Length: 156
Ligand SMILES: [Zn+2]
Image 1 (cartoon, protein in one colour):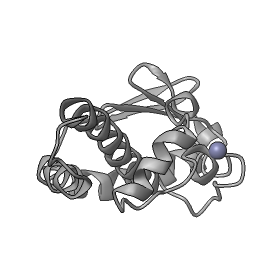
Image 2 (tube, helix red, strand yellow):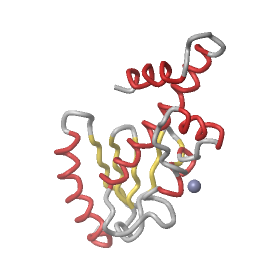
Image 3 (cartoon, rainbow, N blue to C red):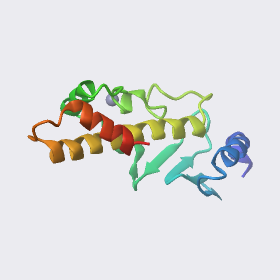
Image 4 (cartoon, rainbow, N blue to C red):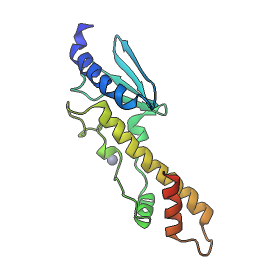
């Protein structure tokens, strides 16, 4: 296994930090295989090749490729963000650490997990906007600030 010594050393260093950061949140599973290191954390699978960290890991989330999961919200939805004063993080894929321009050897799994949490929050906001607008639509007296307050409560 010496052929991926650098990847191994680097991953193991990161695992120490991840174990600290996630010790009360979720289990971390690691498998060392012939083709690389498979890391499961917070419902995400990272596949770390022997070219890591010079090549980004592959990630699988909700049983699909991470890049697919990053499909950006529609223009229409992003217009709703403006209405509700929600910070629009822009196109998910274009800002991704695992994207074409996002990765550098200094990036860590922890950074990708941070990105995932931001995108998860954005996706939750979208779900709540859809839900609340469908509930409150065409009800007199229900305005955007009420929807916004409800959403803040749901996102706590
Ligand atoms: Zn994009």
